[in-house]
Amino acid sequence: MEHWEALCPGGYRFVYGDGLFPPGTDTFLLSSLPRLKPGLRVCDLGCGTGLLGLLLLQRQPALAVTGVDIQEGAVRLAERAAAENRLTDRLTFRHGDLRKIRSLLPAGGFDLVVCNPPYYLPGSGLLAEGSALRTARAEVSCTLEEICAAASYLLRWGGAFCLVHKPERLTDLLCALRQAAMEPKRLRFVCPAAGAAPSLVLLEGRRGGKPGLTVESPLILQNGDGSPTAELDAIYFRQQEETP
Image 1 (cartoon, rainbow, N blue to C red):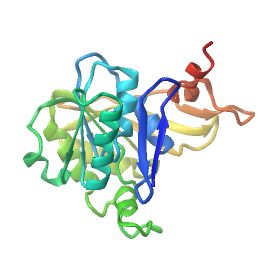
Image 2 (image 1 turned 120 degrees about the vertical axis):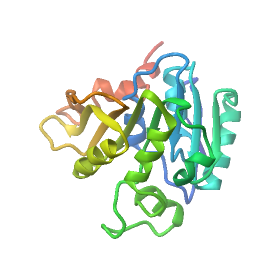
Image 3 (image 1 turned 135 degrees about the horizontal axis):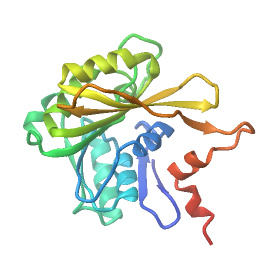
Image 4 (image 1 turned 60 degrees about the horizontal axis):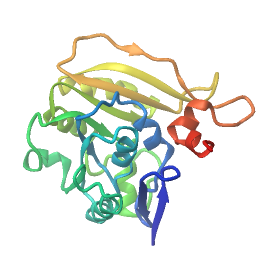
């Protein structure tokens, strides 16, 4: 079954289907990390049904976004979402394996690459039974190193790679970026509440960047009373719901 929802009142509509990985907070959080400006050429690796691309376009309409995913069913839904939102001139998709990225897209053709990758190594913890969910959750179809290599290939010199991951994989992530000639430049931890241990990490690498990592203030999701913080509300476009 298909499920359609709006990002915000009057905003773009996104879709997801049963059996595919459902939209999660991490995708919304990742969409807040890139520094967007008009005219950027963006590639979303492992795009699923296109939610991240829609979020970026909701924040900055003057982007050209290309999504890549190995799951044909997800790509077909993403294409329908682009058509539904009249974005086929700015939001396009490729069905293919990012490990074969050289056969899908040109080298150095993008200013920004984004990715919400599988978090877990094969064999670490329980994996979802459905193949689509396994692909989204664990590195069964591609590794972190392969994702970083694909991003490096796609980026122009000086281009940025933004992704979200688990804090316990941070060392792997930093090593994989440098191995792919991308220097870690911005790091932000995501914490459920002030004083809590981080549950996610947002990271930006830059192709050919000079050494020097900026650790930004944590992104806090909840206030002391359990209500969402103002920043989380902004990420979810909730402030627009309150506008008369």
